[in-house]
Length: 234
Image (tube, rainbow, N blue to C red; front, side, top):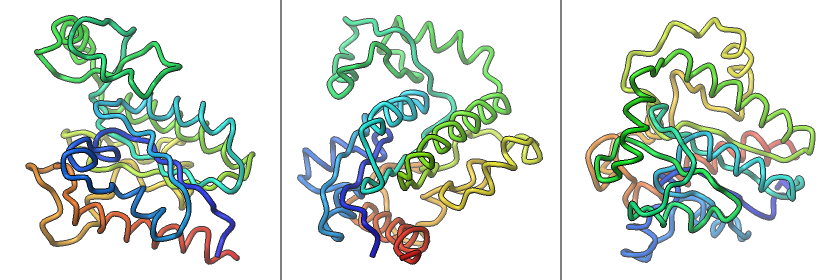
């Protein structure tokens, strides 16, 4: 058994789901994992988050961590971005768990008119290969810091990060380097949902949010990864 005493998770609503947590009163996969291992848990996921917020806030929080905290970092869709926070769009919930932040994540949502204008401009110049490349760079820099502090981590796309066909960038030097890290699921070809296997795991259409059984299944898969990457080294 490793010396992991705490699980820190970050992601979007696929990791911290208000429906599962608050309406059903059920745990999400980070809490399930922690309960099974008899350790504490911090679920810093925030619905609607983009990858930049997820990675930045994970880095900020990890400045206080050591080898006893395991980081579970869930990646979300490439099409999400962020901008300076603009209140008054019924979007105050975005900042409730980001007290040190002044950015808000945005996605395609006509109900937030100011944000929608920004999103449409962002998506007008959106390039899948460039976004995969930027994400790979962010992950490599984050994991470099985590390894320097001997902080264990597992980083994984929740589902296919872009609806487009994967760009032919697997031979890019950044992608090749990232693919050598066994604690990072391949961001071009792999995901947590791809590993779930047959079953009724979601409560809404694909790529959907995990139901209670789905969170248990996700916890089971991640527990196996933790064992192979960290527990088995002891």
